[in-house]
Image 1 (cartoon, rainbow, N blue to C red):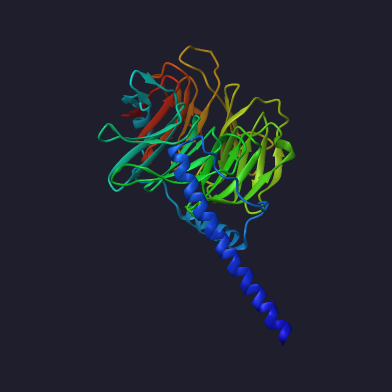
Image 2 (image 1 turned 180 degrees about the vertical axis):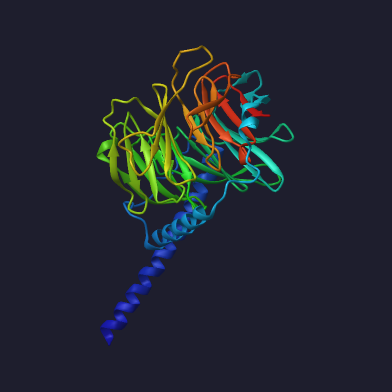
Length: 397
């Protein structure tokens, strides 16, 4: 009928218009990214239109598929045959130290670290208070590349194959791709009005979820540099201080002033709120690969271990002391080893715990100022830490 033909023609025109608009937006964003790289004073454009508070169906289906696949793999997973034993962890000592963020006679505090291993290469990537990102070749013991673009301190870095992602107080997340000339800027994502406190890569390996001081979480396709959905909560008026992602990618946890918010990633909604705001600031959150255990570091010097199925009562409280006996100090970061056997805690020292038995295995006191982050190497054979003393240190047997 004529009405059917007119409707089909209108839908075709609408779809064609959407494709043209999307192409123009991508071209605009690429242009602004290049201009902003040359001159940071040139502002990045905000994303056009109101973002949905839920994800598209194809993304939801992908999250469900990955969740079921990872759950099945977890049920069959055995302890890695090459996992570092307790005696090796006990023998950890400083093996390397460097100042990764130095320019001439000045150096900057190092705020975060991530580790990348593959194809016979071992890299440690750091973010500094100078707004720079540095890639250090652990085997060659030299800085491989410096990534310059952020205008404020870098709070979080992640590695994925030949890609580095960095989040900053300047409210952007930048995507850097490796090349023969080092890492080059690929995308700039601006999904927040405040600084980035953390982000995690989803199992799809092309999406991230981020949290900011603006009290918002965002789900972003970092390959396209486009944010698909955002979420906000009335319980986050003071903004977030930490973000953790369940290994299946279904659940995210944000932390703030003594409070945890549990988010359904598919709906980008808070499903559970825990805490009354009296337990001290949450400085970091991480999940164990077992899919059940969650660790949260607190500003009053305690690491709380939870069974994620019951957040009403912690499994244990691990108290952090520095090298001076009985002096409790703030905990800044926690990180489980890749297989989940060990837990590293960053305070004024690095402590490694056998968390299942609540035993402190080793204490590493190389840094002279508070430690900002820790990251494990493969199979827990080494550990990296960063600190306000402007150094990154590597520990192994």
